Length: 132
Image (tube, rainbow, N blue to C red):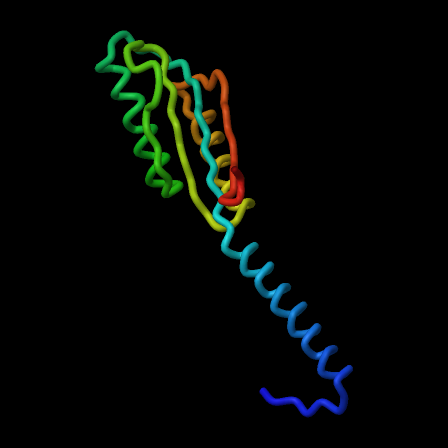
């Protein structure tokens, strides 16, 4: 776009305005391109379970339900050799912090609502792609 500028001062003002506009656009694009990562680890006590085979019959459906319902990465991540304890980890990546928090909240509720599992503790964290 060509602009007719009447004086050197007008030219300088236009250059300064373009610089600020460009800087603002770059800042906005940086905010829009931020990636958010969230994870949650649920430490759970399993109900009437007396073997590792019975443990699998409780933990596998939980992992599958979380994966299917929330479209996230999820796995059993701890207490693999104990039959009444398990740790289930879940991770999510999104462009919006609010969405990541919402998914983590839903995951915690889904685990807590299961009648065959007692939720003992939860560790969670969110980070963005700008974190060091």
